[in-house]
Length: 200
Image (cartoon, rainbow, N blue to C red; front, top):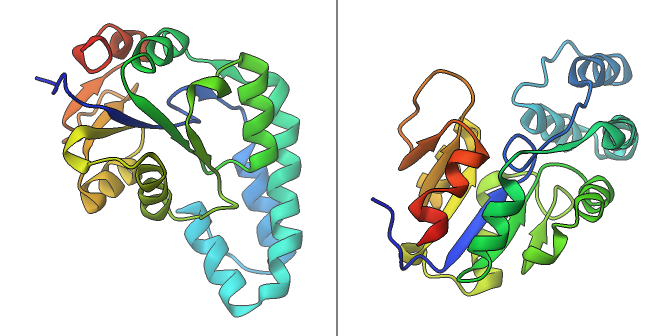
């Protein structure tokens, strides 16, 4: 059962609160062509950072590819059903922060479009860090959160692993039929919005 005394929550954005139709296959293909490598870019930002570590001059042109594809995808972004309800209810009793691997320009445009930016006490994008563990730590620190009174909401195994490394509970929004070992698992944001994690 969820701890109804939880006072801090961190949300992932894409795949959790919203869906963003970035053409990632094309992004990867363009980056392989740009860098002259055969890397899979999976995990995406791990390969990205490895290339930049060897040749820092590649950062700007590689990031421009990603930024351009994200900007192209913004008009097709969709707010997940239940996301507004969850944020509205939870923000009344807890501090809420956002972490995203999207760029600041893209994420700001999406938050403004759906009117949900107001719910977050702080926001961290890939410009702040390309490491989810670091992002999560930043979000918790920014809110003055105690780990035993905080939880992270995301959709990926990487999110789950980050929560474990930082030491907070993890709520997974997972449309796939598998069942990773999260502290709680919901198949949709609507289901999560009706849970005790949100309602208290």
